[in-house]
Length: 460
Ligand SMILES: Cc1cc2nc3c(=O)[nH]c(=O)nc-3n(C[C@H](O)[C@H](O)[C@H](O)COP(=O)(O)OP(=O)(O)OC[C@H]3O[C@@H](n4cnc5c(N)ncnc54)[C@H](O)[C@@H]3O)c2cc1C
Image (tube, rainbow, N blue to C red; front, top):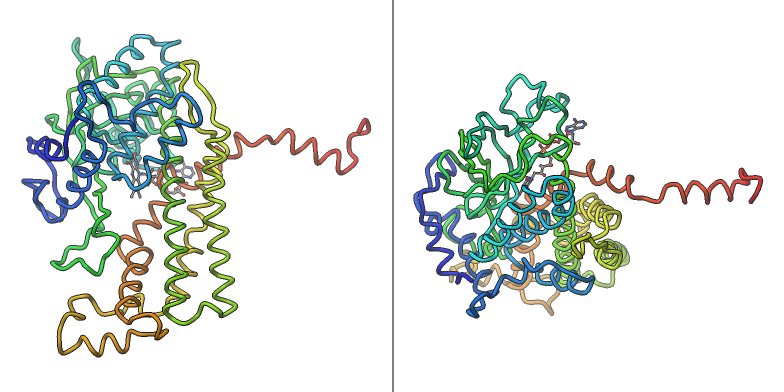
């Protein structure tokens, strides 16, 4: 397994990557990506095991519900790239039985590739969301044929792909880009039915980074996002050659959606685990800031915190139910239940703004206007800041100041905005979760129950 230091060294290759209108020459030292790189490196160190043949525990397929629960527990607090590596690998493991039955050659390539990822301890990103062009038109009917990633040339030894995948978490910092179709393709759209693995530094791969990372010199008043960063990238495939052994699907339109379905499930489960953690964090912040303001006994504040507690508890309940009702593939590999995963993800994303609203409501305007730590350190300001930032005298002014920074960072600044949009859009958006939830809900049983209750069934 790699150490953090070896991971950092592995990024010093020829990858082409940009941010804010300039080329990044060294991801490991650039101020916009350095912290994210360090975060991934520390994830490597956390899991490092020098025993020959040891593998990252996040890549070990869960064989029963308890190991699924354990692996979800391991995800808590890991960097986003470890997270996307986990979901990418689980996605491939889940589709393997279907590939085995229909296309054993693809299945054999997937197995070999999974071994390569585990043996070399690589980090992988999920490249699924295409540019998509006109949203109401299918890939084959787009004015721009490259609106969805497609094969532009087939050679005896592989294919050449062109197009772009958008919003890809951590793509510039990954070793492998796992490319898959974003939805089911129709006959005639064979060139878009392409799933493959591309090295992050392959010729023709270009990434454009965006980040919520604070761009100034002193980031101490960003207590959360200063240690929790990851760029999201537009990944451009500018005629990239993919050798045969890295192709997992090419042209089989009827199979084009299996990867997206499986990824959606794992991505949403990971999202629910993350949201469960963040919901508890927001409840804790609300309680602390209420105390710092002297509001813990005020009725409307208690009600708001109770509502936040219910929100947080229901996300966790959904996560637990998804694990407790997990299913098993024919390979003996356990995956979470679709209904509970999607319902919990929807609930967490849709109600996030209520949580943020309550938190901001309880905290007050200092969420935006609390002076920085730099201000606090100035001898001519320190006394004033401590004095006027104090609410409840039992809580020092500096603590209240720092709490306001944390609330702002969590829900009212660049990271907070990222949170809000990501909760809504990640894993395919709220619409996707509504569709999947409805598909897996036992509607027939509910209808039968309703017929009984309404006296519509004469035999009942
Ligand atoms: C921070 C962040 C990180 C992300 N990370 C990843 C990642 O690592 N990998 C990855 O692959 N993706 C990633 N995503 C992408 C995410 O999955 C998409 O944003 C999401 O699927 C929505 O796609 P879109 O952004 O193209 O929006 P759109 O699909 O354009 O959606 C906008 C609206 O249009 C509606 N809509 C679109 N098409 C139709 C239609 N045909 N009929 C009816 N309604 C329609 C949608 O329901 C939605 O309401 C990430 C997104 C964010 C914000």
